[in-house]
Length: 333
Ligand code: KG4
Ligand code: ZN
Image (tube, rainbow, N blue to C red; front, side, top):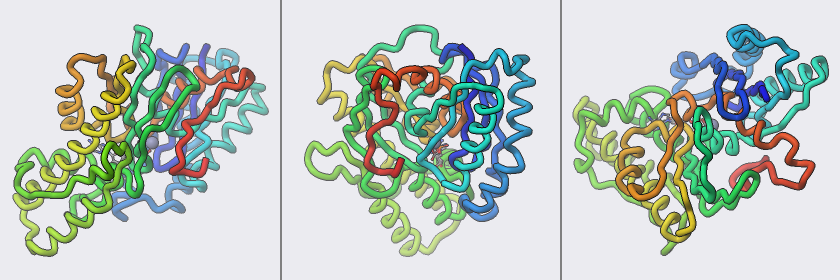
């Protein structure tokens, strides 16, 4: 079964065709990073206009690269949210029109669910349930226990900023540019993670929730107090900040696995799962359990292959009462 996925929830216009929820035939993305780098973050109006410009060319390129015709596409999958409303609407309207004209079933996919399914892409073997997933990006930060397709329990989520958002804000504070995650981890390579003592918000005893706003404020106070902007200072702050985030993310993930000993696999997903230090620390903690992160960096950050993959697994299931959302409380769905 070939599913064509479309994703426009933030600043990537993306289309992908995935066969049987695994094989990625094409994965086409028009990124707006260069445009948003000028403003240090995404301006929703600008993002929406860029989606209008790129939507049809990206769709055309995706189809022609796959070598498939419309008659070989079995269904469409579209990100329904959460995300920027003015961006989402470009993808959803496009998908609605194609679905109507080409008479294809349209599967709405929650964005967070899409990130979760990024770990199914290009994986040959069967993934064993239950799976514990830390899905963490610029817009969300959740610990999800997945007992099977459509069976999700949110064990913890952020009470304020998502980790990716903290990376972006700290990078901006240090004058490092956008997006923050990749640049902070690059700069951190020249710094010392123990240079500055930054807070770790473990919250109440046993809590699996997250909070990163205090850490962000601590970095702001540190930058003001030190009054420095040289490269070594930036590298040391970046490394100390990254270590604080990684320690909390990996620590909470471990706490969740210990509390659910039936778990067979541990997965990282979302833009922050591209972080090499996070992968390394989690790899050390989960030596005795199957530990996965997406096969490519382009499957960590927003993409349409994960939406097509989730769409494949959801197809036909709603009729049987299977839930198609991660029941998070952080977002309006
Ligand atoms: O999943 P994503 O593309 O979009 C959302 O759904 O939000 O995630 C984007 C986020 C950004 O905040 C970006 O700074 C972060 O993922 N990110 C990283 C890395 N690469 C991207 N954070 C830490 N380390 C990275 N290497
Ligand atoms: Zn995302």
